[in-house]
Amino acid sequence: MMNDVVIFSQWFFLLYFIGLNVSYMLLNFAAIFNVNKYMNEKTLADVPGIDSDVMPPVSLIVPAYNEERTIIQSILALGQLEYPEYEIIVVNDGSDDSTLNTLKSCLRLRKFPEAYRNRLDTKTIKMVYHSTEIENVRVVDKYNGGKSDALNAGINISRYPLVCVVDADSILQRDSLKRVVQPFMFDNRTVVSGGSVRIVNGSKVTLGYIQEPAAPRKLLPLIQVVEYLRAFLFGRLGWSPLNALLIVSGAFGVFHKETLISVGGYQTNTIGEDMELIVRIHRKLKKEGKDYRITFVPDPICWTEAPEDISSLARQRIRWQRGLCESLFNNISLFMNPRAGAVGLLAFPFMLIFEWAGPIIEIFGFIMILIGFFTNQINPDLFMLLIMVAIIFGMILSLTALLLEEMSFHLYRNPFDLFRLFLAAIIENFGYRQLNAIFRVIGFYKWLFNKESDWGSMNRKGVGV
Image (cartoon, rainbow, N blue to C red; front, side, top):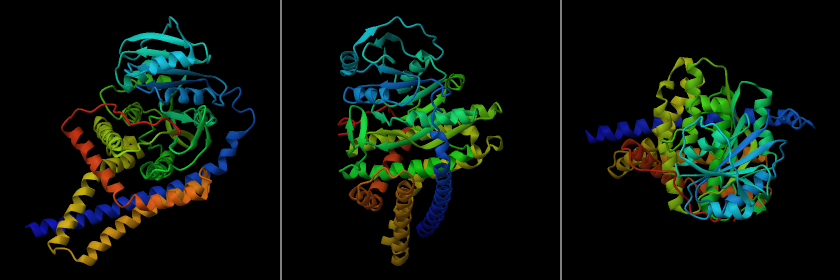
């Protein structure tokens, strides 16, 4: 009996693995085609004067909880954006460090009796401040309610028709807002547009501006550079043309405010608020029969600090996986729904089979292969072949992402940086991916048994350090 279970598990794992990698390769081909198309067409976006009169004003919302080390750098970066009209709304979500005092001293805040509509329910707002240092900056001080609650408060206070959500530990390149807003100008069906997120660790930052992009010196964030390239340049660039994008990064996304409010804003009872919102927008607009677009634009860049220690990485990935589970099952009616188009028939099943169930199947498959090897129920040559094929496919995906980055945007110009990223694309397959799968299984467990979890924290050195 045990022998039959081991053999069945091995064949199941092999077939699952083939399906997974074929799916990824198809996404890769789609991404390569789309990035070439995008690079050929992007010059239209650089026509002189196109951004001066017709670009809609934008409200930038920055949720901040215990961000005393990074918040000023982020605001300085946002203050240098090349965009005609925008406001910056920093929402201090009941921080218990010196975030608010840092904002008061650096921005010279003064109290202002702000009038606004509570279109989304939030925790009580204590005070609204205006900056006398930077004219278009306001700070909202409120009781702690979590990131989603902070974002909803910012949406309530915002004045403009487009809302851009930016993490407090992030830095936008000066032209990023201009580029990420362009889908709203060229296609009036657009309700959401997202850009790329890159790792800032190791780069030179001066007064909130990226002076010189560089690969991190430490191995853990270096591997995450490759991981982010794979996720954004392949995953999101592959799904976007099908209007089947299921996530826009919570670190950098632009929304049509009225659409955002019509679907109820951010859910405060979920960990993965960014993905859950996008999936819910798909579900509600599909149900209403509306013609809309959710778009990914690859070259607007938001730089963010990546975890440099295992414990911070673990908390982040556990939270991400739990958020994925909540997002999918809160909107399960999309699954194989013909009315949902590519979202319901392709993207949702892909996420459910390969991202939701993937870590469990991967860990279980490796365990069964090891059992088969040590009980002589699998040929040693076949064992080595399975392991090598898994590793080689992982390397191909990562190296292709790195190659695509160099063929298109070419951010890392130092040959030594490129060599280290090449090594990271190989090294990540020997331990990092397996460890990441374990973290994701823990996230699945926390979701399944409704274990306590929250916004989480990360040991930060400060942006650009």
